[in-house]
Image 1 (cartoon, rainbow, N blue to C red):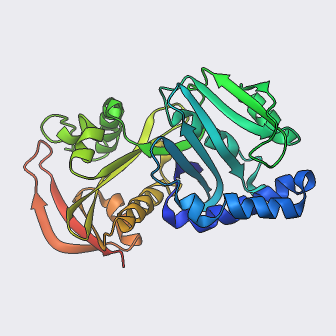
Image 2 (tube, rainbow, N blue to C red):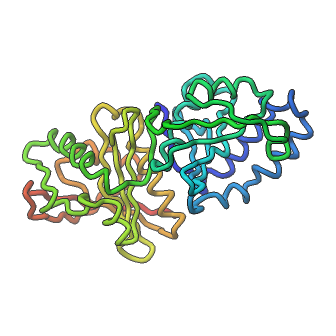
Image 3 (tube, rainbow, N blue to C red):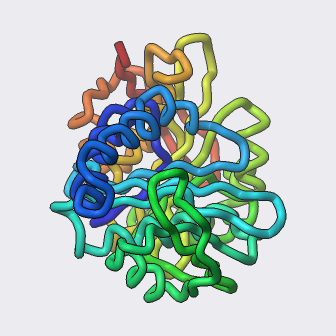
Amino acid sequence: MILVRPASRGDIAAVSALLARTWHDTYDAILGADSVAAITREWHAPDRLADEIGRPGHAFFVAETAGALAGTASVTDRGDGIVSIDRLYVAPEAQGQGIGRALFSAAVRAFPKASVIRLEVEKKNARACRFYEKRGLSAIGHPADCGGCGNAIVYEGRGVAALRGGLVLRPVRDGDAQDLFGLLSLCFAEYPGCFVDPHGDLPDLVHPARSFADKGGAYWVVEDPAGRVGACVGVDFPAAGTAELHRLYVRPDLRGSGLGRRLVDHVEAHAAALGAQRMMLWSDTRFTTAHRLYERLGYRRAGEIRALGDISNSSEFFFEKPLV
């Protein structure tokens, strides 16, 4: 399974090493090893890459497969209906597995209101040129150089937002509400007596982006290749130093590949980066499969149980885990 997700600060060293290795594999024969080493030391220095995280109008992705980092992409919204792919590379040993397609799809979908996607490719990088042409982009010009490293071709595509590929972890949008209710309905159907009541028990999912932002939290969804929400997870911060994991759900057909674990890992990294020292969560007493996942990931079930008084007559176990 290929999962494309936002890069975190914990990924920076691995991304820098991947880019250096991939650039040497791609460009040594074109630019020379010494030139490639100098370029990648400057462009892909860890502090420079770290500056991209959280930059407004910018998306920085990594791709994982079999639990290992295998590629990365970076895209910028220019604000004029055009987004530019600044970087898209796949580790040499991972090429030919669909990772580049998944990263490209994530880059295209990062700014759904844009109508044009644009990028530069070193003209001697024939493999990359073929890759983008297969994605529906066309060469429109030949600038003098590619950021100072050679001669480049400008590629551009229109109407490419419908392109799909791979699983993409992205921030939730309020427009995802209907898909989220569908996802929860599928998951709840596995447990007799569990019902979806969007206005009574799940008001935060009516406008999910707004709801989590209003309380200083974050919420993500996993979009499948058909553009449907296939998983979700959220976090907020109920007390200083404490992060609470919310609404971890994975569609049945996407289970068994480690996706749930990766979503928990993502939330923990996000929480730790914001200073949290402890994770907590509440989970319905009937969700035994989820309990096993949390326990494998180091969460300890405490003795406290709370009753929600909801339409499903839910009672929940309390779990916690130190982050330091």
